[in-house]
Amino acid sequence: MVSAKIVHLHWYMHDTPYSGPNSSSIAVTANNPNDFQAEVKNKLFGQIYVFDDPLTLSPSPKSASFGRAQGTYTYVSREEFVSYVSYTVSIRSGKYNGSTINILGGSQYLPVNKYAIAGGTGDFILARGILEEVVIDTFGQASATVSHHATVYLD
Image 1 (cartoon, rainbow, N blue to C red):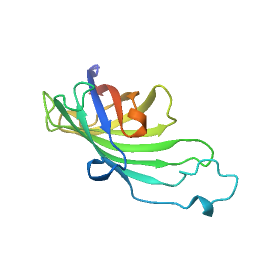
Image 2 (image 1 turned 90 degrees about the vertical axis):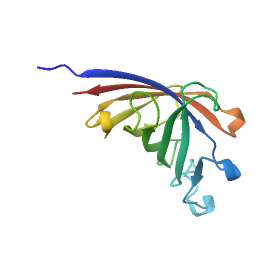
Image 3 (image 1 turned 45 degrees about the vertical axis):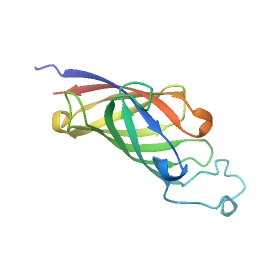
């Protein structure tokens, strides 16, 4: 039996939501909170956002590029602030340049969120693993810097 190769990756994602020409995420659906029944606590329920966030090797958005995170998140709970996330990490530098990793799972906006790694391309075909995400700064809700630690298993 061959044991899996383990790859550890670390990068920072910089999300700038709905802030004009420099935004990296945008709502593609809108709901009218008045259309919902009174018992719906999460007024974002049903909204879908698309993002194309830059990834860097350190917390500064001006640091060396790692790649891009491109995908969607959808608010899926009527009661809580919960979203479902699905995106691709496109690596554009270093040893794995040209490869991608697919990320998916639910986010409850905890101090540490964990997502599944489910395949990719290039060096990460049939990859599996876990991504740990920690928001390190929200800049007053105008943007966010998020630290990502990926443990990827390759057969």
